[in-house]
Image (cartoon, rainbow, N blue to C red; front, side, top):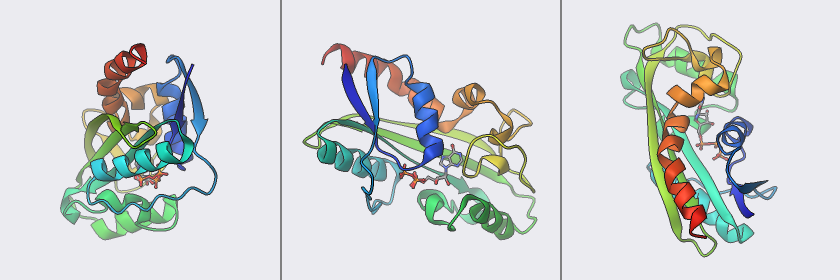
Length: 193
Ligand code: ITT
């Protein structure tokens, strides 16, 4: 069975990928401890590539990376690619974002996820993107998920990601949507390898 290393140190993302990949003929592995990849790209796609290529080269296995983030219209797209670095912890990131919006009624935002699978040697095998539109709530709601989930209400629903079970976040969410595009391509790739 082919090994796929999940090139992430984010427990919330890893948990989502385990669910998304569970019926694939793949042996999933965590990335090596202590491996830090500097995210120097200015786009989600560039950073996903950097992470996937670095981990594939370090492990000698296929690696799947995700670079994602939340872009808020009223903040000119911030925190965007800097979402993880916006503050030291999830509660502090949420607090900073709510303070930055300062009660503004303009709450439109979207999540993006860029996924990349690279092979050892640094070749990019697959790349896809997914997006989810929504609104920033005035206060956190729900206790599922991770990151900004409690303050992101998904367009067309009256719930935040943190109020949805994982199967529903998969259907609506940026990562799940990116994965839906990736899925047939990954099945083809596995059949050919
Ligand atoms: P890795 O790079 O090791 O995968 P990371 O947390 O640093 O982990 P990113 O650089 O892609 O990952 O930063 C994405 C940040 O955006 C993440 O830390 C969350 O704060 C936020 N984020 C991304 N997807 C999210 C989701 O589905 N729900 C809530 N917050 C999310």
